[in-house]
Amino acid sequence: MDIPFLLLLTISVAALIGFLLLRKTANNLPPGPSFLSSNLLLLTHSLSELEPILKNLKSKYGPLITLSIGFRPSIFVADHSLAHKLLIQKGAIFSDRPRTLAVRNISSAAYGPTWRLLRRNLAAEVLHPSRVKSYSWARKWVLQILIGRFTPAAEAAGVIKVVDHFRYAMFCLLVFMCFGEKFDDHRVEEIAAVQRRLLLLVGSGRFNVLGIFPRLGKILFRNRWRELMQIRDDQEQVLIPLIKSRIEKANSDEIVAYVDTLINLHLPEVEATAGNGGKLTDKEMVSMCGEFLNAGTDTTSTALQWIMANLVKHPDIQSKLYDEIVTVVGPTPPTPAAAAEPVSVINEDDVQKMPYLKAVVLEGLRRHPPGHFVLPHRVAKEVEVEGYKIPAGATINFLVAEMGWDPKVWEDPMEFKPERFLMNDDGDVINNGGFDVSGSKGIKMMPFGAGRRICPGSDLALLHLEYFVANLIWFFRWSADDDYGVDLSEEAEFTIVMKNPLKARIVPRAEK
Ligand code: HEM
Image (tube, rainbow, N blue to C red; front, side, top):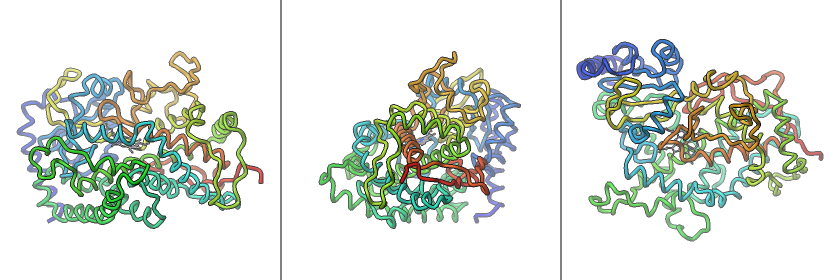
């Protein structure tokens, strides 16, 4: 039954119902293309494919655009001050999520007590600065793996394709934070493979239609539904044994892993009715751990690759960064003979003394935000914005990349210029890297979103990026391969990645 005819039928029925239901309010909705074109656009394009179309629509309709699907309008916001108004000033109305297909985790939870409990648990128990500090030896261990992998190529002045190594490193780190264990290569690759399959399938937009018409979608798009269930089953097969093994060892270890914090949670909504007192089921544990792993790995490794690509493309910026690093920690020490030997590395306290490094990382996130949109938000109640009426239940999203590239806010927005983060609006030097990435006082860019649903992992992500960029530049000199160069073209996966992944020539900095 999973055939184009059904798609057409669904579009026609949805369009008819939607047309009838929306007729009343359509005049007051923000402007956008006709009802039928909207439905066709939304059902046949993934979010990233819509981005160039939305940019054109912005020049025609302005920064608040409606595309309607079925009876649910989708609103897109392409202006930073409007984003601030909605996400910060009217945050309570714009912090819900569209209802999704029976998963329970932070990003899909409705704005309410369960979301608050799950989010507070992550923020207080795992992402709190003191807890993040307790994982510092794991960061060093992972860095050592990276250096060990890169050193042979560097000693032969060879060219390496970095993306798989970056992804593997982030997985090692997040898997450790999640399950409290250092797994071998094989196990980490197994976890990474199942998580990545799920991420790429969801990111492809293949299952969007199931979320739009949940009940009908399961019947009409049976094959897709089965495919989704199969990959979820595979994920459970891999993650449940790890969760169970951690539960058996709970409290026997100094490290607090994410799983430990989930064991004793009691969900407020189900507490009264469920026989287990609102505790998370195995499937819910999988959903929470899966979210933690994917949220923190793909985004960060994508950003790391973009930043390193820009440092290869701009040797002057790389030299300036290396000079700053040397001023703080001294020249690069000799690389140990064997990869297993301990290396002296730049630690997270040193990183705090490097404003140019912070500017390089922020510029990377501005110029190449891993997500060009945030996760969809749902409007909780009818609200008037700029004279338009946005109905309760509408979906709303924000053009993140467009905001970071706005020439009204950023001079030469498509250029990679970290210095812009070292000056205030009057051109005075603010050497302490005082940029507020949360956008709470005003949004200039929003790579982590903004407001109540802002990414709770932003500080951890910035720390990981600063730590790995600083060390990778301290240990190796990076340059472009003559045959390959650095191509900054983009391609949409789950995040927006380099279409032609970075291949760089690296040479050890230290004298032998
Ligand atoms: C460079 C790295 C990262 C980027 C660019 C990023 C970006 C984002 C964005 C844009 C959102 C959606 C905000 C919204 O819907 O308004 C988000 C949500 C989220 N992120 Fe991140 N993220 C990163 C790293 C991390 C890390 C390291 C973690 C945790 C370990 C994490 C956990 C989450 C969670 C749980 C949510 C859902 C929040 C909610 O719905 O309340 N992220 N992130």
